[in-house]
Amino acid sequence: MHVQLISGSPTHVLCDMLIVGLFEGIMSLEGASEAADEALNGQISSLVRDMPDCGQFGKTTILHTFSGLGCKRLLILGLGKKEDLTVDKLRHLSAVAIRAAQQVRAKIVASMVYGADAGGQPVDKAAQALVEGAILGNYHFLYYKTDKKEFSAVEELLIVEQDEGRSVLIKDAVDRGQIIAEAVNLARDLVNHPACYMTPTKMVWHATEIARNGGLELIVLDREQMREQNMHALLAVAQGSYEPPKMIVLKYTGDPHSKDVLGFIGKGITFDSGGISLKPSEGMQEMKDDMAGGAAVLGAMAAIARLKPKVNIIGVVPCTENMPSGKALKPGDVISSLEGKTIEIVSTDAEGRLILADAVAYARKLGATHLIDIATLTGACVVALGSNASGVISNNREWCRQVIDAAEEAGEKLWELPNFVEYQEQIKSHIADLKNSGGRQAGAITAGLFIGHFVGQCPWVHIDIAGTASIDKERGYNVKGGTGVGVRTLVQVALKQAGQN
Image (cartoon, rainbow, N blue to C red; front, side, top):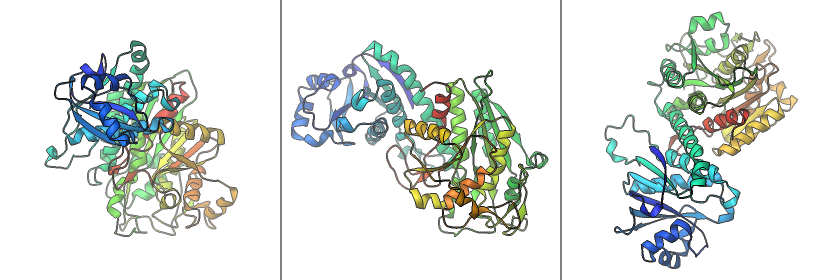
């Protein structure tokens, strides 16, 4: 979708559909809705009187203008109660409006920054959310569909602003919203591809494209180079698959004079069968999304390369399949790691923490000073938090608070889990330094704490996106499939560290 900020009167813009926002319970029209009402001889006023619920949150009503306006159709979008409006609700509403436009096959859609200043939301934040919601709501994954005409996407979004002062305020926000939403959709694409396509080698291809387009430094380690680096935990997971493992590193240097380096580490298991500890067959097809953490890191790095914040970032994505075979890792095995710690394998289906152990240690080796790892790590996190929030474990309260605040600003929900020292007992091994599973109790916590043994003294946050990486039906600005969760949080962390909001 092409997004353009234009100046002028919304009622004069030539387009297939013009979106006008209407708050619940407010009977008097103002601004663009008032101007449109006059041009349509009071049709909107009549609608508000006859349908007092048309301002309810997410309700859409389409009016044909019959050449009374520059648009062919007018979409009345219910914004809900004025005092309840938030930036993320604006993002949601924008997706609702775009989907309504899709239903009538509108190609060019115009919109004001509706809801700005309501609920204390500044116009630039509202504009960014509007653009993000439109692009996210316009998304469909059609790569493998032979008949792509069954879906009609909106091709152009015109953000209309009459006030020149406000135009200056929202220009950067519109651009930022487009960049971030496109990065989320990139991550969605990576997650939605089947594992027969999205192999570790294909992940490298996509990382190469991101590096080439964004001017990032790219490092890719193959199996032999991993062995030279003593990445025995990652290699142990990979040994059951015929697909060669890859360690992807993307470097962005936005502040060469600073010694601070953010390390974004994303789990890249391109298919997780469970290995010898084989998963049940029911639902196993969804295990193609076990690289959603890696997709989030790649998407975030793509956005960061375009936004150019004054900060240094290393993105690390360890990629492999987890498969059973005669060469596969076995329960009871003891392996080593880049950090030198030994690990007893209790379950080969607890593989994500193994590859992340080597990855966070490698990020530290490359100079990262503040770490965030993101992974579809545990089913236990889904049981605890469902599909609306991602779980968080950290070794540093200040760093954790910064990440959670950034996520909230970006419209993603994180919930911190406890890291009481007593939980460490569950991952102690009697024959090795650690064991890779602490059992069913507090499974999301002990899995995260396992990774924490490999971060050294770096401030570190672990984000478990097992419940939020994909959804089974349309919800808000997300469609069925990969959500691209984590991209907006990581980008917002980078922007805040650079002093940009």
